[in-house]
Image (tube, rainbow, N blue to C red; front, side, top):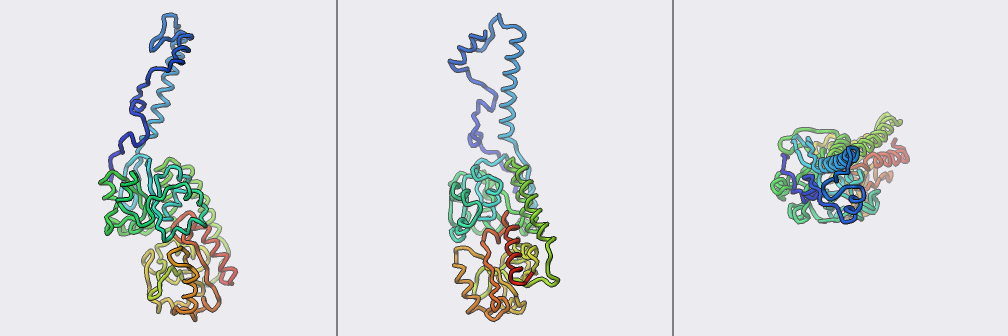
Length: 373
């Protein structure tokens, strides 16, 4: 993503006169008070002494200084390194976030009241009910309930978009950081999704990538202290999970999102893979070089999963998924099914988000209850 021009001053809600330091004439009441103190209109009476002159000058300079500082903050540009690209732009005034992962990172930093809106596909909207950010969802406009599109962004007059590569941004659908830049809209991509974007070969730990996103958002929106505090809290939870007692041989866990002909599951470039490790287990698809992808049933059966994590969102009722696994799938005779070790995880905890650490703790507690940790 490259530098794009700053939005027109009007989009910052800043009066042009104030930006230039021009101050209009005082109100009638102010003129009366000025006359009483020896100040008339724009000038000073001859009776005004050096001390009064100094006080007035100080007040004027202080006022101007405060305005200059305010305007500088409003127009300050930040340079962000993101997915191998450097971008410079001012603090967004009308930001839009796509899908739960990006949306809840914004909400976790207390930015809902500064957002133009969200794009939340109706297939995952059930996350709102269980989300700790339910109130934020309620007061933030949903500008689209399908996939991210350039049309929706432009129609909303957004000036910044937060999404993932091939997880919102898509060359096929014609909405990319470059296409948005061409219409004056800046953007930021989730670090977890960087690989493959303009030759980017980085493979950050997905949980570390979430921390990086939060820190970058803190810089972009001038809430760096808030971001560092949140990252610190998440790292404390992560450390506690790592230091907790765990079995010598980790339990084998399958992530089941959906699919009958082939299961759709999580690869090693997902937050969920790291969450399973923190919970004291290992994913049977930990060697899958992907974020989310399909695999063959044969390899899954051979891995002999001892527990299955079923991702819950409203595209398909979770009960239907579990019934399929237990009664029709190639895993119906597996240890996981026989021992009824099927754990339901909310979509908002399964994708990269500030909820990952709590999700990992819940999974660890479940595995312990089943004698698998």
